[in-house]
Length: 171
Image 1 (cartoon, one colour):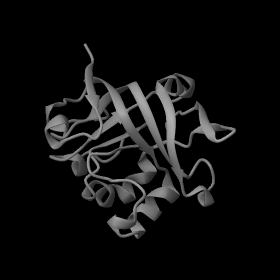
Image 2 (cartoon, one colour):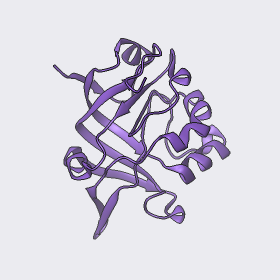
Image 3 (cartoon, rainbow, N blue to C red):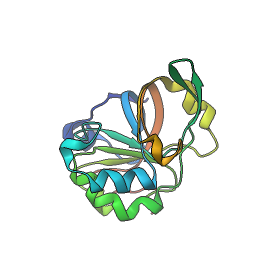
Image 4 (cartoon, one colour):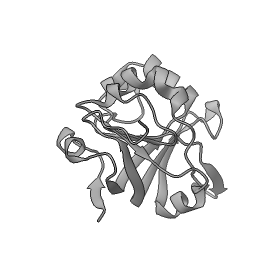
């Protein structure tokens, strides 16, 4: 049975989760890849275009279609998270409670504060079905895949691959 969670996530939310749990996320998630991580960490917290406390970051460069005055996500598959390990401590220190991606990350930084959710690579159209709308896009100067996309999701299916207790499905 899947655990249903709404973002922003609390410390209590993530401490209840165990590696292997299936979770359906609803609420707001924010995409970020390499360039967005660098920019997030280069700015003072008050200049970020989102509140990082309790946020879930999705390692994803969505495929989007411009529709008049809005955007439609066509596909939103995960990108490999390991290359974001260099930013992990800084990102989690902002209060980020979850990261979604593929392939895993270092487990130790998650202890006591956050979880890593796995989403299946190659299933970008499935992810897009759970994305109800694009709430905002920031930093388009980085390019569409690297921009920061604020997405409203409903029952976004993920698996806890690294929990806040140091357990990892990748070990």
